Length: 291
Image (cartoon, rainbow, N blue to C red; front, side, top):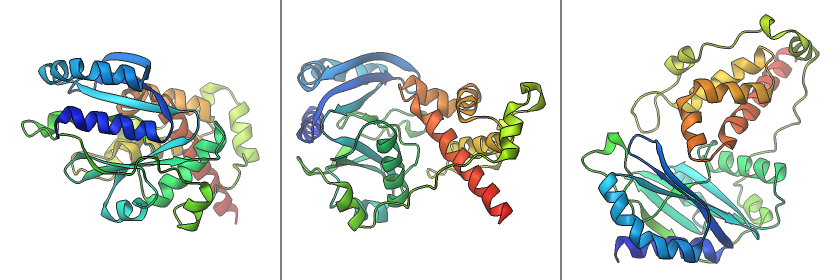
């Protein structure tokens, strides 16, 4: 099977669970965006990929797609270890290896409405499966190289580990397999925090982002700090100081290179989801403190 056959197989597998179009992004080896084509149909991508492959190789560009479906919610479970992969193998329709030892699985879920319900369900599934809570919903195309500086000169090729075309599951099935984390309790803003928010901006200060990076645990890949954890902890501190979710998400895009990278990949939701989860964690801490 050629690399292009792998790419076509991936597209067809997404189409089998309802994906009708894809946002296509090119980023270089340093994570900088080099091109973007929104709303590409499966047929358009099949026509363009044979022409895009040679150029991506010559320029060391990554080819990334974000699938969209009108009939099922497509949830990405990223950074799964062996145990997590085994737990979701019977419910996922596609599993990819993006580099040696790094995997992601995709689950198509029916019966979910768009918006907040889907975001909350995806959060519960990612947490329950032990996946990266800030997965972007975009993935490198199978059969292409995963260009990152740290992989040079042995740049890995993204490959399909398993595919089950047409597999769509229900929320009840995932619940029955114990793959969903419990729902988060409604966030209740404390009176003290509300008073701080009503104060002038000059009465509040932002946390020191670099200190959060310095205090973060090592990344799962063992190279440098875990930037997702640094972002989350920084947002928790911001929430504790009375900054709103929207204010925190906006500021995170200014201070976090990871948030900026996600925005370049048209994953504007990363900063907001991180701020929402952090605000909920900060409120749980306040509730325990009063208990």
